[in-house]
Length: 180
Image (cartoon, rainbow, N blue to C red; front, side, top):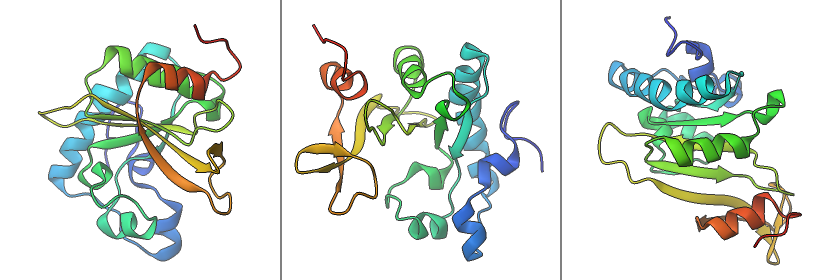
């Protein structure tokens, strides 16, 4: 199969350990592939070009069956080929905070979600893009227990979605810095 873009192979765009382990078919149709190419060209490749460093794709396309298996949102744009999750930290640089800030400040997007924040570290950056009607909606997703941000998988922790504010971003991602 052909690559989705210059730096995203078909395998990266569709691979899933869960799909493999459970025998779930995770193959997009032609319309979805077209949307994936739009996201890859206008989000991922622009981020990749800006930093000139490798960035890991942690999730791109998800079939409906795979999305259910992993407990994904019923309205997940991954199922439409309109969302990509990126992780620069896995290679050391760029940081996920740098990826988030570049997308936030420079690109058109539908949703931008800072995911899995713990001790100032962003686990990955979720970004979606539609052909039209992009909302530029920014959200935080993290796990909380007794009012404190905790690692995912912490017993009794709840997943929290919170609207973006710059001051909250600085408090979550740069907790040791003084915020003016």
